[in-house]
Length: 458
Image 1 (cartoon, one colour):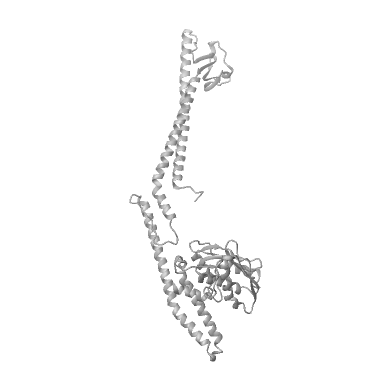
Image 2 (cartoon, rainbow, N blue to C red):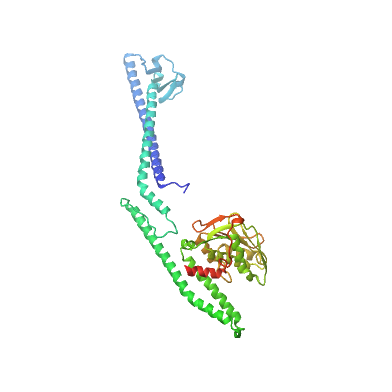
């Protein structure tokens, strides 16, 4: 991920920071020791030299004789003290500038009045500067060499971990039987981590297989008794002598059919998405949606609701049609159930998203907010049919994108994008003149029957 440093970079940076800190500490300590040593050397040399001359001068009257580097000012020398030395206090002073030269100066106060002994150290300072530059360059060269060695050493150290990290990054959530490869020469720590992760991956595979097997078994076991109940209710409701109990039988029949839809959906969720795609059919969504709406118009009885179509560009999809019918049909059912009057608007947006906007029910702002919160969590359930939470799970299973948003008029806008999962859907916009026609007798049967047939075939 961008913006984050790798372990190798952190190791190199840490070693370099440590090296720079140690180097700075050594340089500062060396500089302090050098200055202290110079001070002691100059003080001892100049003091002893001045003392020996004073002794010879006192005993034998020997005058002072300047050399190329050592000169005496004031006292019995007869040479006036320069202004640069005159303001100095008694003692030894290093690197005092005079006439463009550097001196170490000993200032003495005594019988000889104010005497200044100056040692010219200009040449020594020049050599010292040259030596300092050479040491700095050599130090930088050592640091650069150390940085290179640290970089390649860190690369060698973290290479097994980097390879393990790359293998982990390449793991795919939907893939099965994935394992991390470990080299025989890898460190023991890497082998332990890889072994633990491999065991974790095996446990996940076993868990998914158990859940899938249980879901399959439970759905198949429940299908038969529910089918028996539905069949018996269908037979009973047709009898003339059951007028009083017919509403209850109708409720039993509707509930059993809803349960059959639920079981069919559970079976689909237990299937691999690639298997669901294997029997996909290319169809024009703009022609399929009106047939799905027609299957649900009867649910608007007793309500002042109507359907209106917005932009419906011709768009060909390569998708499992029964599953599309189930998903879109339940979104339409939800829009009907959550509306009392007005117009349910359906459109296909330019970004290839099917939008279903309902006008909403006569409810307060607080109630609408609570409804939208439930829909956003895909936790609302339909009164008859599959709940929106399972529809959301189905869309996620197939790689589609399902969103719920508050509408401008106070209702809800459900947006379903079939293009989100490229491995599941093949979406292509087509001109209206070349779009594929949809046969309502073949692909537009009621969502309930289509969904069951798809689950039975799998």
